[in-house]
Amino acid sequence: MTRTTPPRPLDVEALFPELAAHRGTTTRLHPRPGRPGVSDSSVGGPLLWPADEPWPVCTEAHERGRGRRPADIRRGREVMAAAHARTPYEGLTEEERRIVGELEREHRVTGAGETDPVPMIGLAQLYAKDVPDLPAGPAGTDLLQVFWCPFDAHGPTGHGMSLDVRWRRASEVTDPLTTPPVPEVVGYEGYVPEPCVLHPEQVATYPFAGLLPEELCERIHAWEEALEEEAEEREDGEEEDDPVGYQYDLSIPPGWRAGGYASWHATDPYAMDCATCATPMDLLLTVDSSEWDGGSGSWTPLEEQGLHPSVAALPTAVVAGNHGELNVFACPADPGHPARWSVQ
Image (cartoon, rainbow, N blue to C red; front, top):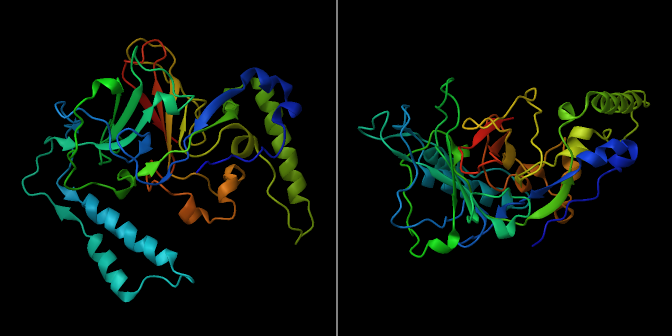
């Protein structure tokens, strides 16, 4: 089933003609629950991985001997989904609460050392033929595969993510792995994605305001402030939609995306240069905790208008950072150079 982004609330280029020079495209991936196969682009689905190639693992030193079992996490989600599907929804039954409570228990892995290999979780795979805005990989490759460690325990803070980004030639995988390794426990349920098929849609996008020319950025902010002042001056009790905003309605769509511009709404923009050659990097993939929310509801696909975001907008069950988004960047000079990422 296709997903269609509604027209924007207004023509931003009519208001700010200079934006035409900055217009780009991004592909909204629109992951939705399904049964993808290894030959499909997907989130949380089976990956086309050679049976004779080692599966990515994390060997960084961190706690990996305590957490929840992936199978328990998925079973708990099934119980919650069944309860929400009942009409009217009246919460969990006593038996369901008992089952969920048991499934939420943490377990210990006896003898787990802090550098023992932890199988990384296959987060997503994207075939270039399916995703118009997916930046090109190394010469001859046509399949992007992204993995992450299921523990928040990396980097200088000891609370960061660890990703493994791979490109390959799909035609070279003649004997695919059928049963990939799975970590015994994970540190956080948001690292365990639900299998989703994709419904790619290419849409227009514009840069984060803070990265536009200073004069244009100031004019956009002044326009937004004027709209907010008008909203505040309305008579009490007068129901009006929230004023249109450049960030949430006109520039960068929410949800999983490939290519386009990164949002820097949680931090000031900072340089994202290749650690190998210092080339400014391009956005490869955005991993979002939700497809839309109260602030970005204007991007809700036409086919899903009226659905409650607490269920419909969380198809992957992935949580990036503090319910934010993960932006993965690639080097345009040499896509084989290591990726970098930012959590917003």
